[in-house]
Length: 316
Image 1 (cartoon, rainbow, N blue to C red):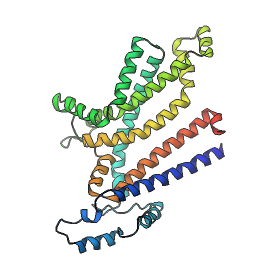
Image 2 (image 1 turned 90 degrees about the horizontal axis):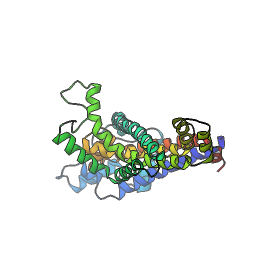
Image 3 (image 1 turned 180 degrees about the vertical axis):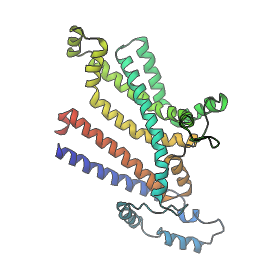
Image 4 (image 1 turned 120 degrees about the vertical axis):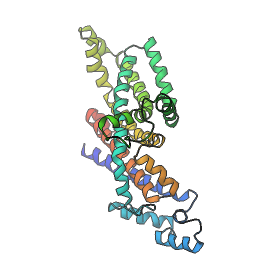
């Protein structure tokens, strides 16, 4: 088990370094000049060049990345070009808001996905199964930004049931009820695709398990159907379920970023959106690095849990 953990840990570190290289390179390849974006339109070429030297943008890309990586390993992700304060500090202020949205969406996705998957899987080829399958495929095919805009137009602007933007009412008392009302539409938008994916995977696993011999034996013993499903079908689907949940947790971070932009939710996604427009490289790198760390950590934990539940994986 120790060798398995070390092997997976080293692989996770390599993936994280690769992600940082990729993002850093893509930023440098995009059109525009970060120094020019920080100066007024009347700035002279000499002023732009002086700022480029001060920001270290005149160095080769490999040298810039080496300096960035050295500082990042010490916990310093640089100063925001726009605000001239720690980029990590600015992102940390928004991190909690993104976790609130992604966490609520994950909870909704787990509850609805498992419930729909079990209902459909225990009733194969029935009208309920077919209806839920069609809804799952439709939900998985809808772009997150499009769904968010539609929900915003219908339930916020036309019906007025929920707030359109923000995390709290500026004139309110920032209560839990106010937060929950603002959270509904972004959560539904973010959770739609994960609900569909989890439901389809649980349905497939439950449907396959319910046809196995030991399930028929359990039924022959007189066990109730609910006990058969909980004790056999869901337990057999656990390793697959862990993998799917880990992947969807990573997806939810990306989906929540889109929902943040649509609903002006004050999280890392909205911060990333404004930073890209301003070519604020330290903010962009800080946000993408945090997302990558969370995604890789969740999948690393999922690998460890799979190794615990299925010893064959540790020997692979």
